[in-house]
Length: 113
Image (cartoon, rainbow, N blue to C red):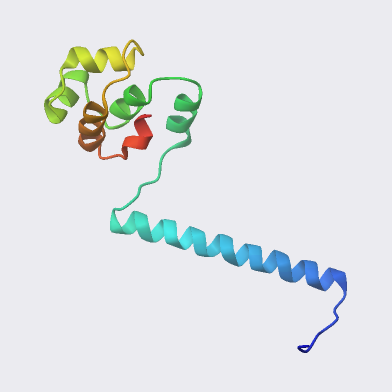
């Protein structure tokens, strides 16, 4: 059997908290590095709250990027009418369509689903 050490529970709990804090710091550093490399971006809480409230993710991201439906249509090669239907939740959009829109918005397709 290996060596053992006995410490007070308070000390053990403090060590656990310090380990959790270190893990949080490392995770934060990974996110900051990804943002600096351009692999990720910070998203304002307002944008997230709009999507969580049920607003069309396509509309929220399009407006966040400062695009009109027409400008997004031209950038993605998707008709403006189809964008309007997806934003109005009358249509879901095919995987290919969502991929084109996500690429034009420089986001992951998961952000639109």
